[in-house]
Length: 344
Image 1 (cartoon, rainbow, N blue to C red):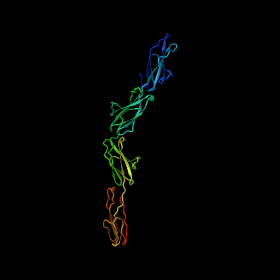
Image 2: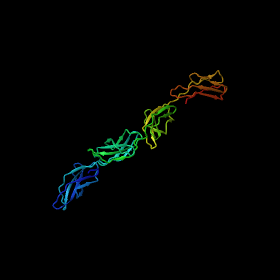
Image 3: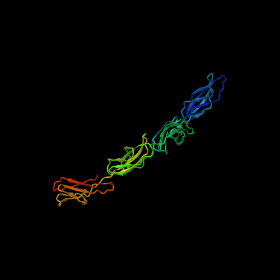
Image 4: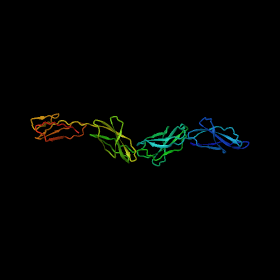
């Protein structure tokens, strides 16, 4: 029998004119090695060599020993290679809604290994594993998974001859797909602040949506600016005429995250109002022009007050504008006043 850490030897009996005391077994490590040393002794025609390194070749030779300590010529040399050892510390990381990265620690002589075979089954406590990947290094990425589904994984190592470890390290009950489907593409509404809205994720258990932002048409330095239970999200305090990039992902109660969805929006600036009307002093014969183009509506003046109204600026980026009017009272007679305004 050969295992990852043990090789069992068997050999024919020897005869002696005095009596046979036993057998001495010598071994060396490596194909073609010659530096044999004692591996142990036996009186039976079998010997089990233990505590060996997985995926390693050993050579053995046997001598018969008589009662006087005389040693026979050596037997033929036999070589055997231990089986690959099972990987250890199988872990899962970088999980998304459709993929997971597995990593593990090789056992024994890594140089004697050829591949690692990854198997999976679907459901907590499942047992119907099937191979889904074959990789040459101690990690592998599994894709095409179903959101919000529990998977179990196991990995075994194989040598160039196709021998595998036969012992499988389980990653039991690992929830490989996180937070379900991502939310829909957010829509941005241009107001003095930017409002993001999206359709909720269809997966159960979503507890929050994480909003990240960076400034610039090609920016990549996203920073989380909010965490809310549902749509919409209003982002204020922004710079005018500036493009912002946003990305959103769903999070469940366990802290698992979905993939990102992204959008961008550009803030606007407000033009000053125009068309301020001529304001009349108490002397109707005198007036001072305060703005252009020419007045659109009638102004009002009394002995101690003056009133003016003005129109909104024309701007396609401006979602709405209320027509303003202003009355100033307590004025001195025969006084010229000027009025200017700004939109907001």
